[in-house]
Length: 272
Image 1: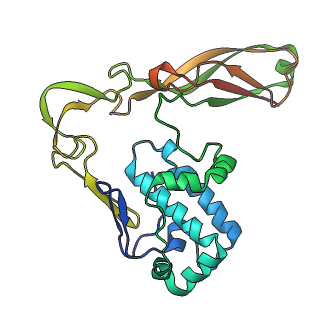
Image 2: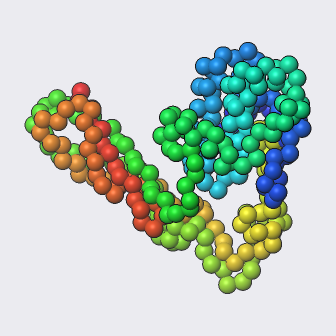
Image 3: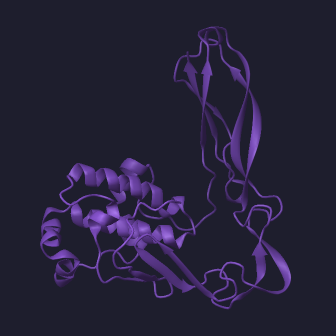
C-alpha cells in the first residue's frame, strides 16, 4: 500500500506495546498532502480519500494502516475546526498541546467521533462492532448486453475473480509445527519495527507475543492471508425485457468470509 504522506521532517514514534502515539510535532497539512491555506472542501475531500484507504475494517491486523488512520483523523479534526485551525496556524502543534489537545490515542475514539461521517461517505458504521465472524464482501460485476439480448433474454457465461477460504489452512493463515520455530514475522527478535511515511512504528511482535518463537507458521499456500483469489465461471440467465442498470443478485457467490459466511454477487446490466 502506497503512503500519501510526505517524506521528511521529524519521525514520530508509535509504540504499540504501550498503545500510545509519542509525537513531538505534527504537520497536519503534510499528513493530508495539502498546502497551507487549503479550503475546507479540499480538507474534507482528502480526509474522505485517506479515511477510506486506511480504515481498520479495510486493513484488519495492519498496525501501520491504523496509525495512519488516527493521524489522518486528527489532522481533519483540527483543520476542519475554525478555532483549532487558527490556533494551529499561529502556534503549531505545541499551541494545541498547551490548550490540552492530545488528538486520538485509540482508534475507537476516532470511530465514535466521526461515526456519522463514516456512515455517510464510507457506507460503514463508525463504532467498531464486537468481534464476531465476518461475512465476506459482496461483489459487483458489470455485464454489458446488446439491446437485442435485453429484449429477448438469453444465457451468458462470465468469469469473476473472488476470494475463497484457503483449503490448506482452512482460513487460519497458519499451519501447526511440532517444535518451536523462529517467528517468521519478526525473524526471531520478538520485536516489531516498520517505517512508513512520517513515522516509525515499533513494539512487541503481535504474532509471537515477544517470545521470538512460535509453533504456528504462515501457510505457504495463501501466504498467511487465509484466503486465495480464484476465478469462477458462471452461466447467467438474462431475463427477457431487462432494462438498463438492472441489478441481479446471485446469492452466496461473493468473497468468502469467516466460518463460511460468503457475500453475494451482483450483476449490473448495462444495455448498449
